[in-house]
Amino acid sequence: MSRKYNSFLKLLPLICVLFTSLFLTPVHVQAKTRLNVVTFNIRWYGLGGDFSGTGSEYRDPSIREFITTYLSNADLILFEEIVDVRRFYNNVIRDFMNCITYDHPSSKHQHVVLCYKKDFKFIKEPDDKNYALESVAFNSDRYRPALHGILVHQSGRALAHVIGLHLKAYPEKTDVRLQQTAILAKRLNELGNRLPVIVLGDMNSHSPSENGQYKNDYELMQDVFDRNHAGVMRVPNNYPTFRNDQQQHILDHVWVSYGVSVPQKPWVFKACWDQRRTVQTRASSRNYENLAYYNRYVSDHCPLAMTLLLP
Image 1: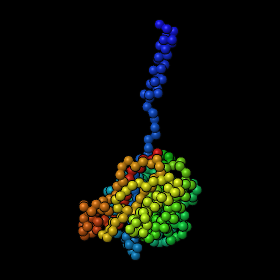
Image 2: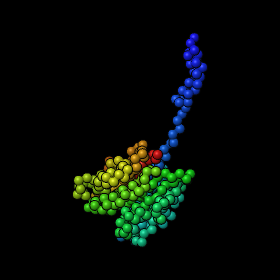
Image 3: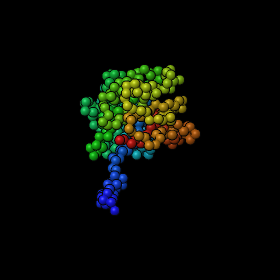
Image 4: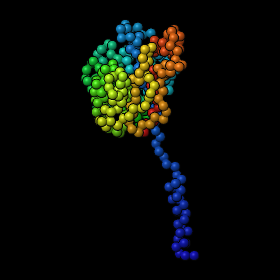
């Protein structure tokens, strides 16, 4: 037997150990964080769903029941059009979520409000003294500021930058919405890429037949993000998120940074899109799938919900 072969036999046990270490030992990869997010516009909450309302808000029990029935697994819900924030917190959401918003001088301001399960907290961005991103409102009380901050797990781990929006309404105001989008894109560049980003809310996006443009507003917004290298992509959703007895639109959206995955199709409550099963009858028919009842006792928007996997 050759001397080389004897040397190989002596090394064989070591080779087997190395093989086992390299190929059979499990590789530990940090699991992605699963986060259930929702954006939900509740029409003129605090005024009974009507700008001219006197503050008689009769929808508290039905809105609370709707949220607890259909959105109970949400970790984070961004609400829009919340005029009476204190009432909303005390009468609707306080038992199962904490909430953050900003101050505004107008008594009829439609606040953007972020609510989140008590496993989380929401902290200010280190370069800001409050939760309002006033630049999106052109530093004016005429428009709605964005709400921004960092979502943190109770363990202390920072999860994501979150930016909540309610952009300028009306189909013909695409130019204003795109200006707001450009301001937001600049802000996203300032944040860097240490944490993922979630941008969500009522974007008031309209189709070419309504806005007079060559694309839908949300496509034009994506173009602005891309030109400014903002690093976010819209989560596809083709279901209308707004509907009444006259019209329906896809107004509400979520954008996420690259690296955030969406394992399932987004969910929109069927009152806004399932015309086959939605019964448009008298509002006295107590059924949230009945569009007339839903519009009167909840909203003209339906929640857009999805699961995100954060890196």
